[in-house]
Amino acid sequence: MSFRIFEIGADSITGDEQLGSKPKFWFTRDSELWLFKERRPNTGEDWAEKLASEIARHIEVQAAEVELAAYEGRMGCASKMFVEPGEDLLHGNEILAGQITGYDRDKRMHHCEHTLSNIVSAVQRMLDDPAVSTQVLRILASYMVLDAVICNTDRHHENWGFLMRYEERQPGTYVKHLRVAQSFDHASSLGRELLDERRMQILQAQDGIQRYALAGQGGIYLTETDRRGANPLKLIELGVHQHPEYFCPVLQRLRHIPLEPIVDVVDAVPPERISETARAFVRALLKYTHTALSGLAS
Image (tube, rainbow, N blue to C red; front, side, top):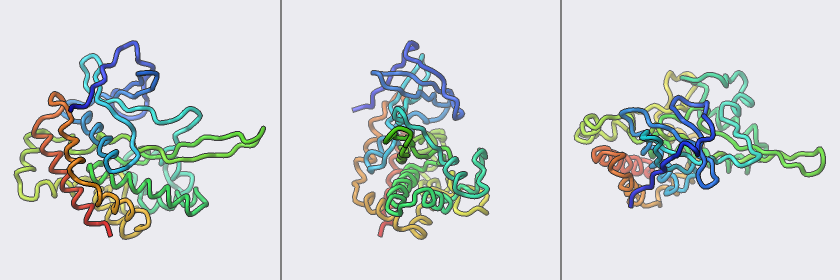
């Protein structure tokens, strides 16, 4: 069974989206708000985003709902709005700037202070209750594990956050509520940037998939002195070593989730959206990352 494709009509468009680098706009469908993101030429950003959402569901990670979509012949994907009425999305850069002295919330590229250590420290400082901060950090750890499964390289400091709302308990008295936002924006994953000729070279090379999976550089750094972001799989190795209380429960859960349903979801992408070479590449990549991460569970 293939994934459905939303055909977007011009009369459903409600506005443009300012964040990000790709053409995108908001539209409504069945009284719900969705964000259309057009895929860039010669990429698989649309199917990568959709597969990431489905894989997240299979491995029990909270992620934005995504569907394949098209608008006037332009192919892309649609992501369902996850911010509830009355809530505000507090991005990671705002969280870190509020808790880590000197953190530059406006830096866009190569932000070496966006480290696992700083993320953990900021959350622990922001949330006084250790039980609550542990729960939150386990959720964030699950997002990093998802990144490692799909080789997502774009977990920068505006690609995670909290949802915040204020409840008025009595006139003039408000209580703040925070919850972790769903994982979102996974288009930079699953080898979506490769052309089929390169995919085939990697598939045919000895240890080609392993080398590809370990070459990617993500948006979270191991230390503030690093020049490049950490490989998503290497980041999980660090997490297991430094913060087993957050990462090990997620990895133990992943180890007991069968590989077959995760890999088989690739077959649901319609053939007009993904080539057979890309499909084979994604299947091989998921088999490698699932096995590698399952071996880290203790």
